[in-house]
Image 1 (cartoon, helix red, strand yellow):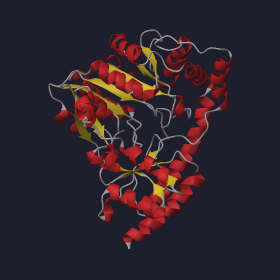
Image 2 (cartoon, helix red, strand yellow):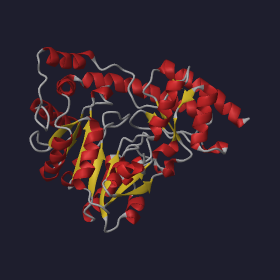
Image 3 (cartoon, one colour):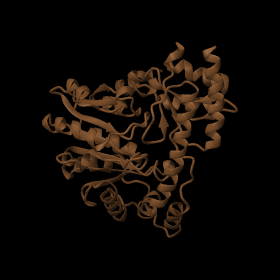
Image 4 (cartoon, helix red, strand yellow):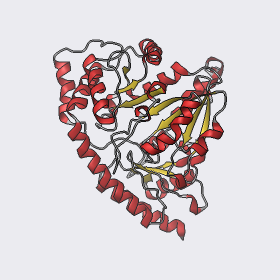
Length: 389
């Protein structure tokens, strides 16, 4: 049977996630140390999980408002105000979603028409360009560099803007590089976005995980709130990946359209997850602080080890990834990662999974214990020595 005639041409041309490609190989291999997935190794804090359990035992298992529990939206509003100087109304400007991923998808669906261009800085997380292209939009890569600390600069932004440019994705702190954009960095590009009338999709899922300085949202700058769709969630900061709980914040005129899509496609996020989210965002600050301190220690350890073994490594200031150069061995990033997996049983993600401009790098997640990281890096050091020979 020819199934191609039943399938969407756009969907058939989308490549599967390069992250999951290497992660999925592990199910058939033994003794593999994986540094592939950006998933905290910490359990969800007990008081957060218990809030969900209590909601179930008390039969609070009904549909919520499409926008989410009002107490959760109010909690998100208060949290964003006190942590990041962002001010969104609980009614009309915040919608609770099934993870940050749904929020990104709904945002693109709400704003894009066929032919609209979206500037996507690379290296970047794998979902943006496929979701843009499914909507008939055009993903325009902006190649950031290690020399610029993987930041978006006015010099790289301006030449990419055309009369078809609708939006830009800003995903900082960055997956995969760990780069951040400071307030000064954002202030350098904000006037361009205002002058050219460009929307921003700001993915701030790692906003709590910055080291040495606080995260700044572009939506907090003068003139930027009204042209920003801000996406975040609970997965990374609160170790709640499997709970699938996120949120999107935007001006009401944009949010009205996002909410319609959410109503028809999802209805509402899991009720138990939402009650867990209320507890997390209300009483979870100390949990975030504890985990962040552990990540910082791991970050410093991994960067030091990689540089010592000869893998030049940009020092990340956010998230829980490092993005070392591996282009000095005369093989592609995929070959490097495949050989490392086959010969030393260590799994990392090749750079080209994060865009065509990311060849020559690899992503390593340090969302794992020091013991786990030590074993993996010892094996990597042996591998690098063998390659140098």
